[in-house]
Length: 319
Ligand code: F6P
Image (tube, rainbow, N blue to C red):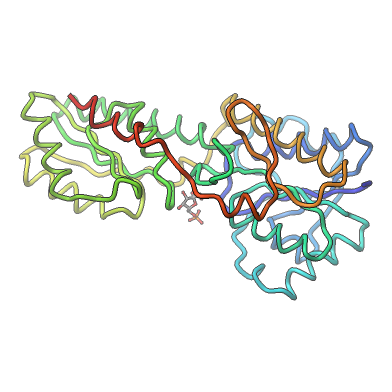
């Protein structure tokens, strides 16, 4: 293989730039040219593709976001749109594509491989919701952002003897809330995996104030409940002022922390090596300490499992 392309797709994640850099630098190692695609699959269809050399990726390893831009592009489900994208690669003699993103982006990669393009998926999303890998690029940076924000909330919550209800991102996955909840010693977490029990939440917060704690923190995965309403209900039931905070997109930005950069670099190196060897379509993953690769269809069929014991920890250590 002489030419490959790289794109970032879906919600951006800290560490995507480190992956792009490693794709370019590894390709040079194998004497392959790399092309960058702007704004994910949208740019691929609109032919927004340009050659990347080593200088394009200088000093991006530490930058948040993605220098290639990203987009959500549901139009890519259509066969004729996929064909246009594949044709845009083929006319330049590009045979392989590295897709940095989440499961949705990998479905696009699978579709493209049916048009003869070899594709490698690198899991990057703050949600850590990809079943085939232990951790995704960006998760730990977002977690650090959530934790440092909640630490700040705790300072003021303690001073005023308040309860803080904090909404974090995660889409359908509770990992950000779970890990943040453990890391800040929250009273209660509400995630898609735990479900939302309104009365139990209030009971636990009340019990914690009854134990003479000066503050309480409830961490909630987005979309689980209306956090402003929950704050009002907690305030009414406990008599303690309660404030809701939605952390929002601040969790997606910022300098990637070291582990995300290392993970991104190792995964990208593997993706490029596999393209160089002529592999057809795989998802790169972290299993334990190993970087592995799994056929895309198999990876997409996997179901995510978070150890139940980790959820137990929050309740067990509440006192
Ligand atoms: O997938 C990353 C993520 O930040 C989710 O946590 C969140 O649900 C979603 O993207 C938000 O998407 P958007 O930035 O398109 O509003």
